[in-house]
Figure: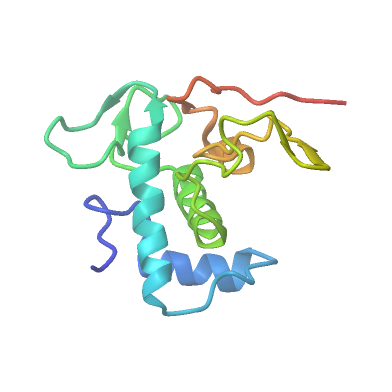
Length: 155
């Protein structure tokens, strides 16, 4: 399935190629021209579609995807913000590393003991579908549906 802006993607193949060859410093998980790349980009767009509560309204109620949108003073009503494009590409990299939508193998456990071996499990290791470093790109235009809609600054 090809990337089609407005149908299954926010980015074109040319934008992806430019991002990974000219803009991003490290992209070890990204080999050019593979089916997995395209699948990861499509899944990333789908996750942004269904895991985000975007501000304001779609520009056209008949459009397939959530962007473009109206109501933003600094974003054209026919434009997909660069931040959304960056988020899709960054999330695609994460999806190639591991499945953001799968449950942790330790889910439901906080302590495990088998004979003389005891393991205390970090229950704060919940994986987010939209990781913080991806959400940072788009936090000013929407929130996560899982309720973790803001970033914490720790100093």
